[in-house]
Amino acid sequence: MKHKPRQREQKYYGIHACLTLCERRPEDVIRVYLHKTNLKGFSRVIKLLAKQKKAYHIVSNDELHKVTKSVHHEGVCVLAKELEPISFSHCLASLNKPKICLLYLDGVQNPHNIGSIMRTCAHFGIPYILGNKLPILSPSACRIAKGGAELVRLVQLDKPLAALAKLKKKGFGFIGTSSHGGISMYNYEYPSRTLLAFGSEADGMGEDLLNQTTQKIQIPGTGFVESLNVSVATSLCLGEYTRQHIS
Image (tube, rainbow, N blue to C red; front, side, top):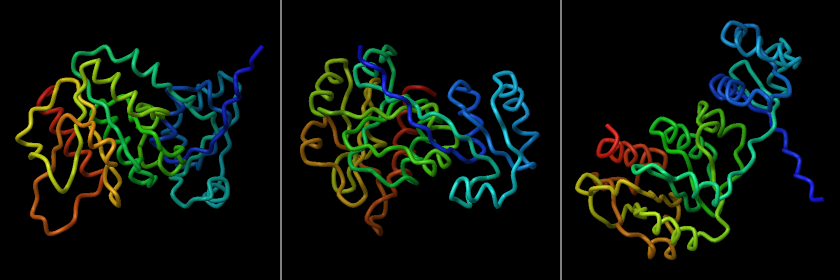
């Protein structure tokens, strides 16, 4: 009999990240470390932990520095099981809405960018971020996501081109973004089912992916700088999709 692999444990920190984690999956929480200034804000979480007979500890800022190995803990740390990964087949089976936008990240690795992008995706209701080289979510990325890491799931693709073909059969347009070509995003009508792709700031999207796009778009600007930060570009493009289809 094949045993299910044990979920890894991770230390999460940051007020919004920890509150969302505790409220959405309390069964995965192992213990909580709190500075006294956060007792009121976490009162509901503390009651929930008490019912489950799970520990919470009131600790100093110095202790939180040591536990989290960060000065950006915001007075809280939660030791919890990591989220189990989502398979592409599970993702594909859940795409039943007529209007839906997904993200594809090609080579984006910076944890600050990943966290900011997940926060933006949570704001606009984007359920999945796809890619074949997505990083493991760090505690720093989860903090920056402000709870978005619990709402938006990363989907690793072993065979990205095959996955793209399946999404296209499901009616998704694969829209590539570039600072060097394509039509203005403000002159483009997004398909109701859109997979919006971004490359890394250093290299952009790979040629194999660009060749699969149904349309390339760009964000118009002065041209005085090379391009926008990828998380900022994501926000603008998702905002325009939302304006056209959801608002």
